[in-house]
Amino acid sequence: MKEIRLAPVLLEARLRLLRAGPAATLCGVLLLAGAALWAWLLPQRAALQEELARPLPVPSALVVAPPPPTANENLAVFYATLGEQRHAEQQVKVLFDLAAKSQLVLDHGEYKTGYDKGAGVATYQIILPVKGPYRNIWQFALQALLAMPFAALDEVSFRRDTVADPTVDARLRFTLYLKGQP
Image 1 (cartoon, rainbow, N blue to C red):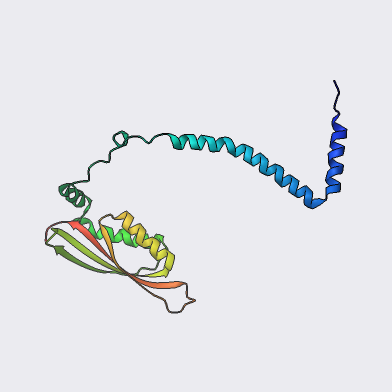
Image 2: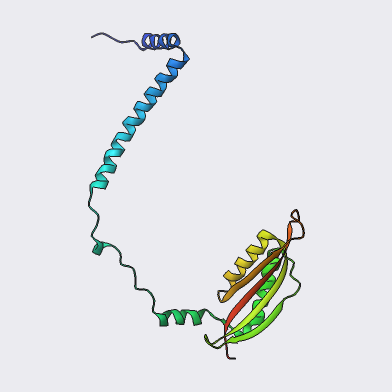
């Protein structure tokens, strides 16, 4: 049997590459890379075709969604989410703390109580003039809504003195929906 030596074969390949030039060498390398990629993707394509050929499960085998809640269940969840009227002032403190945490200037607020006869809930309207960066104002509003799930953000208005001013004057109006009597 004839023995093949590796060194002469490598020398022959190197000489052929040098004679072919850089463009032909690049084409050859790209051709080899394409062939290797094709050889790698061919088994994956066959596996994908096999998976796509399988029949879909029957609808009865799929998970069935629970029935939607009834109106009474929704109403019960609504009333369970309401805040306590006797703790309304504490919620104002939560708003002031969140404003301080968001690095906003909040000196005072306007407060107004009410009662919604149709829903049978007490309302506590809070108007807060805040001052600070636009992003911080929105973070404050979202954090307030997360901290008080019984609150609604009814109005937001912004005012900026100049375009270059990073500080924004904003007015936020929250309504707290509370359990309580008129």
